[in-house]
Length: 213
Image 1 (cartoon, rainbow, N blue to C red):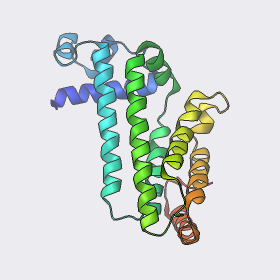
Image 2 (tube, helix red, strand yellow):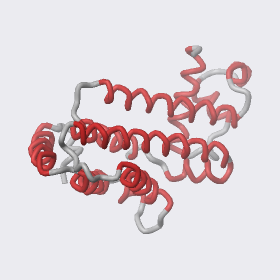
Image 3 (spheres, rainbow, N blue to C red):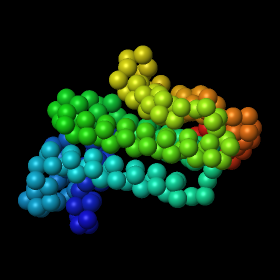
């Protein structure tokens, strides 16, 4: 990707995350970048094109992080803990205004993001459950498809519900408790023993206190 174009996309993503999408104009972006609108439009067709490029870039970046975790020599439980740590980092950047604006003004982009994220979570969970069974850490009678769908639904529900405030469902406490509920539900006796040991270990060593309750 062209270096300036990537800088524009990264800056736009940062502004959208901070202020929402509707309030940020192309004038704002050119001013923040310190470039002319003419230069900006040499790389970006219009605001919809900008939003599309930002969301596609962010989806690719997140995919890289998940792939890095997958490429490490981790067992199924360790892998799930690392994915949850990544989710903690991502969701704490969540800005309700950004997604409200997407859903209202750019519904096709919103649905594309939702579809990609849903499919990614679903496939990842299926792979993880199968891996955990092979390693003797998860129960053999776990229905992979049902659990994967429950996991995805649980991740999506707070974003659509008024039962929880954004502050509640983006808090480390909520995400961690939801994750522990999931992992304890699919682990067998061997897995539970490993989870307890591993959880205590990372809780003590995690400088960011991501797993502190």
